[in-house]
Amino acid sequence: MEEKKKVGVGFGVMILKNGKILLGKRHEDPEKASSLLNGAGTWTMPGGKLHFGETFEEGAKREVLEETGIRLSKVNVICVNQDMVETAHFITMGLFSDSFEGDAKVMEPDEITEWRWFDLNSLPSPLYFPSAKVLENYRQNRFYIQK
Image (cartoon, rainbow, N blue to C red; front, side):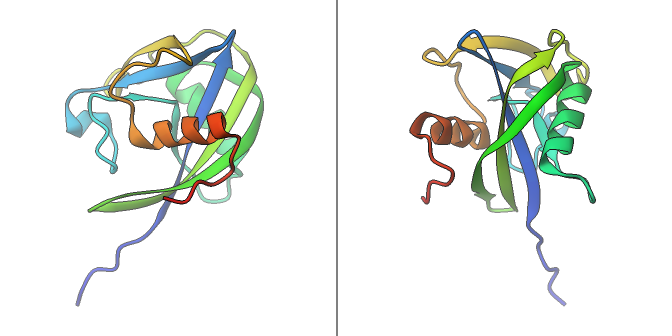
C-alpha cells in the first residue's frame, strides 16, 4: 500500500527593527538544518511548524522565543504561501512583528549558527525560499501570490 503524503503547516516570522530584518544562518549540514524543505546553508526568518491547538500567533511567539530569545509583543499574519519540494509540501503562514523585547541570541546552535540584522535592500544569499516568498509578499503588499 502506498504511503500517503501529508501537507504540513509552518510559518516564518518577519521581525523588523529600524528598517532591518532578522535572519538566521541555517547549519550547513542538512541533518542539522532541520528542514523538510531542504534549507541547509541558507538564511531564514525565525519560524517552524505549527503545533496542534496553537494559533498562528501563539506558534510564532513560541518559535521566535525558542530560536532567538526574543519575546514578541504583537505579531500579525501577513501572507500565506504554498511551499513544495519533491518530498514535502507546506502551507507557510508569513507573520510580521516590529513590537518585541530582547536581542537575538543563538538558542539552537545545532540548527541556526548565527542571527544577524540585514537591510531590506541588501539581503544575504542564499535565502531560504519560503522566507524569500514571505518577503516578496511583504514587498508587493499581497496576501497570496500565485506561482
